[in-house]
Amino acid sequence: MEKKKLVFSGVQPTGNLHLGNYLGALKNFASLQKEMKCIYCVVDLHAITVFQKPEELRKNVFETVASFLATGLDSDKSIIFNQSSVSGHAELAWILNCVSRVGWLNRMTQFKDKAGSDKEKASVGLYIYPNLMAADILLYKATHVPVGADQKQHLELSRDIAQKFNNDFDCKDFFPIPEPLIPKNVSRVMSLRDGLKKMSKSEDSDYSRINLKDSADEINKKIKKAKTDSEQIPDNMQTLQKKPEALNLINIYSEISKTNIESVLREMSGKEYSFLKTKLTEIIISEITPVGKEIQKLLKDKAHLEKILKKGKEKANIIAEENLKNVREKVGLI
Ligand code: AQP
Image (cartoon, rainbow, N blue to C red; front, side):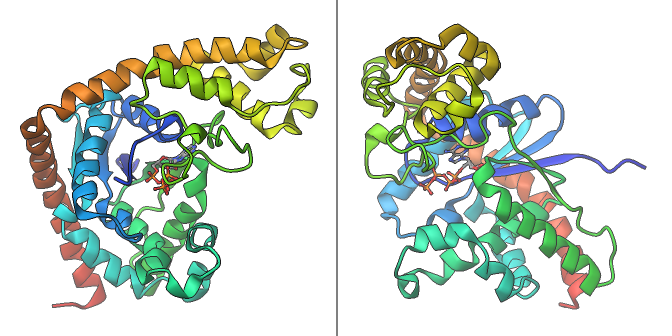
C-alpha cells in the first residue's frame, strides 16, 4: 500500500522574509498544498537558538504568518501554527537528542557558520538545532520536506535519526524516511553583494537582499547596486559559472520569468549588465510588491492572525499527541 504523503516545513521568525525564502521555500509551500496535506510551522524555538529580543520575536511570528498567507497559503487547506504552541516538538526533540550522535552533529556546517570563530560561546540550542528540526518533521511523520539547498544537510540528519530510531526500537517503517523537496533551479539564492554567500535575514547589509516588504523604489535601488562586473553578459554557462554574482542574478531572472538559463543567455549575451538589471527589477517588482502589500494588510488584523495560529495549533496538536503516544510506548516511557 502506498504511504500517505504529508508535507512539513518551517520558517524561522528572525526578521523580514526575503527573496531567498520566497523562491527557495514559500513559493513551493503554496503549490504543494494543492496536491498534499501540508503542515507549515513558524519555528520560534529554532529562532531562540540565537538571542532574540522578546518583543521582536513576537512581532516576527506574526510577520511570518502574514508572509505565509500573502504567498498563497490557505489555513483551510494547510495547518499553520507556531512551534512553541505544540509542546510535542520539545518533547520529541529530547528523545531524539538521545538517538542522534555527537559525531553527526559535529559535521553540521551551518553550526560552524553561525557559531563563527568562538564556538564555546554559542548556545547549546544552536548546536542541537538539527535534532529539533528532525523532531519537527517526525512528530507528524512527514514524508516530504520542501526546503532550500542550505537545509539539505540537516534533512539528511533527520533521515539518519529516523532510521536509527526505527532500528534501535525494532520498529521498521515507524518513522517514514523524509524526502527533501529542493527547487531545481534556484535552490540557493545568493546575496546581492557577495555571490558566494546565501541571501539571509541576519546579514547586516539590507542591500544584500530583497525583502518581501520592499517597495518598488527599494527593489530598484538594490538591484542597481547589486554587484556585477564591467564585462558584458557571457554567452555560455562555463563563463557564467565563474561569475557568481552574475550567475545569481540570471538564476533569479530565469526562475521568476520561467525561462531556462540557456534562453536567457541567448537573449542577453553581449549586452551590458544594466540591461539584465532593468529587466530583473521589473520582474521582481511585479512578483514581490503585491506580496509585500498583502503582508502589510494582513498585519493590520492581528486578531485574524491569532485565530489562524490557534486553529492550526489545535489541529497540529491532535496529530502530534497521537504520534507521541506511540513514540513513548516504543521507547518504554510510561
Ligand atoms: N538564500 C536562500 N535561498 C534559498 N532558500 C533559502 N532559504 C533561506 N535562505 C535561502 C530557505 O527558506 C526556508 C526558511 O529559512 P529560515 O528562515 O527558517 O532559516 P535560514 O535558512 O537560516 O534563513 P535565513 O534567511 O538565512 O535566516 P537567518 O539569517 O535568520 O539564519 C528554508 O527552507 C531555507 O532553506
